[in-house]
Image (cartoon, rainbow, N blue to C red; front, side):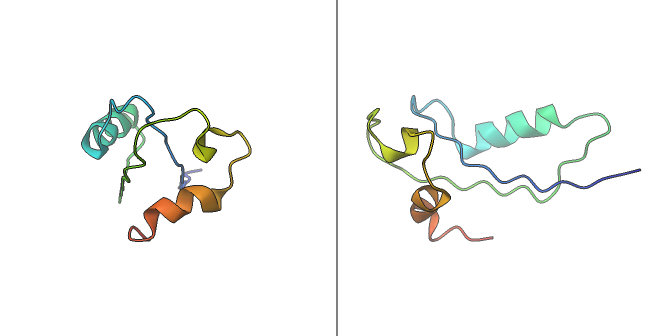
Length: 75
């Protein structure tokens, strides 16, 4: 049986090595063959210099803490 998945995630790039285009390329590459990636939307937000004490670095960080950086980028 065929399936459709919706994946929602926040990715923290503490080393500033990616931009949304590079992530899009990686995700597209990973979904070759029988998996079709559709309606991909990637938004980014500058969070300043990385600090290990940043709330986004905590394992128990809430979705709200991430979401406050994306008030303009809504589904």
